[in-house]
Structure formats: C-alpha cells, structure tokens
Length: 220
Image (cartoon, rainbow, N blue to C red):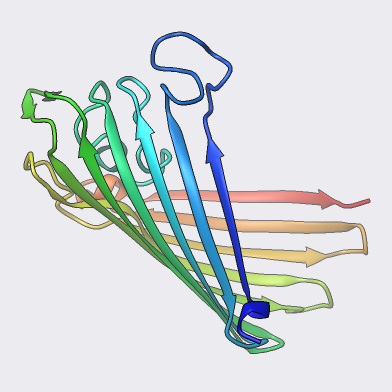
C-alpha cells in the first residue's frame, strides 16, 4: 500500500539551547525546525523531500552550514539576524545491483530580519536572497572486490543567485569528488579519495583546490 512506502520525520535543533544568555536558548537563539518525507517508489527508486525553517541571530549566521561561498552563508552580513526557508529534494535510482545513481538539489530563501550593512552595502529588514545547490552521485558497489565501493560526486556548492541588496556570486564553483573504499578484510578497509573545487568561492579568478585523502576504517 501507498502508506507502507511513505515515512516521515520531524525535528527541532537549537545548538545553544542550554545557554540562557541573549541570542541563545531554546527559542531565542539559533534554531532549525525540520520536516522530511521519504517515499520508496519501488525497490529501486526512492524520493525524499525536506523542509527546514531556520533562524540565525546576528553573529551566528551560517545559512549554508559553512559550505559554499561566504556570501551563501552570510548573504546580508554576519551581524545581520537572518531567517531562512530551506527546500530540498533527493532521489535514488538503483539501475542494477552494481550501479546506483543519486542526486539532490537545494533551494534556500534567506531573509534579513533587521536593518544593517554588509561590507558597507545597506540592508533593509525584509530583503531576500536566493541560494541554490545541487549534486549528482554515482555508486558502484562491490567494485574490484566484494564489499568495496567506488563513488563519484559532481555538483555545485551553495551559490547566491539573487539578492535584493545586489551582492551575488558572479561565477560558478564545481565540486568534483572521487572515493574508493577497498575492503581488505571483513573489519578493515582502505578509503583513498580526491576532492577538487574549481573556481572556489564562485570566482573564476581563484585557483583550483586539490585535496587528497587516505583513511583506514576499522569496524568491530
């Protein structure tokens, strides 16, 4: 039945809930109210929808969770209290036991809650900014050996595409990532990876960032 394939969850996060000081606490500080729906269209196809209502007091603004550009995190300035509506959609398509294609897209509408300035640019209460991100992932289970996994990610980190105060990300960053989990034994795996960011900060003038990783995973 339809309802057997549908699941939902809700949550409320307040990172400084136990702090009674100004701009903190359970309801007076930074918070995120989360709702999520997951639906298995079949044993091979899944769909997820997410909505988050968040608030960030002045001095605690991180609209995009410290990913993407600086502007995507503080579209109106770090000292300007900001609220945001985050919308997300994710999909999963298991084409075969050895091939899974997934992806997600996120749209954020941020709003200034007070008058202020962002590097000298005036900000009015009610100003809006639009932030967008997306990614496509490819997973190849049991690639090379049983229990191993080869994965790739291509996407765009959070980017300000429209802003009432005129500050927007002019270019586009690309997030490229490859990882391979090689299962040495039932309890030990090696996990080399490569991360490449083209046009960091959505700025074509910035040099490409290369990050190589090598992890050893122990499971007991």
